[in-house]
Image (cartoon, rainbow, N blue to C red; front, side, top):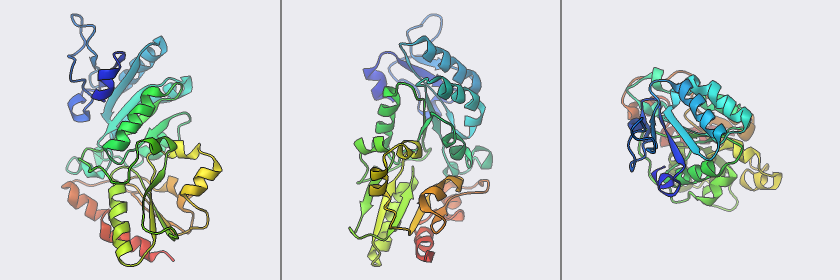
Length: 298
């Protein structure tokens, strides 16, 4: 984000009192106030909906690229404004962090479950859940170059390693192959966000046991759904029906990609309060459990 701010002087925004937690603070600027109107950090206060409506007004004025941030679980508070961004074709960027049960000790009140499904259902909204810094850079680029579509960036709390197979340019397709150990693969793992690392690790374990596996990173289902039939077939061949989707959120959206004969490792209950590693084990987001889910498929 700060790279964008350095190159784009008309880029500004803030957070609903969570700028340092969301990492949505432009480091070269101070807070905007009566004495410093050119500063680009806006202190919206604990007012998510007001933040969204202010951003919409700024976007309607024109000439600016605006963003606002909060915890993902609080996206419900700003959702009506997001809907108006989408309805009016305003390219506002919404930054939603702390995106899963990996929040840990904050517990189920702060652990999103159904939120991804809700935002993905909204027309004319591009939702990106990037796997690492490279995909995040690409998602930011697509957000600030969008003309008529707002963007939701759904980001983790925890640090993530940069995956060997992620690709800046391919994020623009919504989904692409990040790992494959055989051209005649018979199993596809589809993952988003932090779970891409989990899927690749599980695929490598399966490969060590003789399995032939492809891993697809799908940072944006919205963008992937807009691709032509040939590209969709290239990434998710119809002939390969052994599929598992992996995402720390509601499972309902994933059956369109894995089919009724596939499986989804997701969450259809509320979260729990415990250290993040313990929560992930409790909900089955481990290499061992994902390998078992794949092996249990016919």
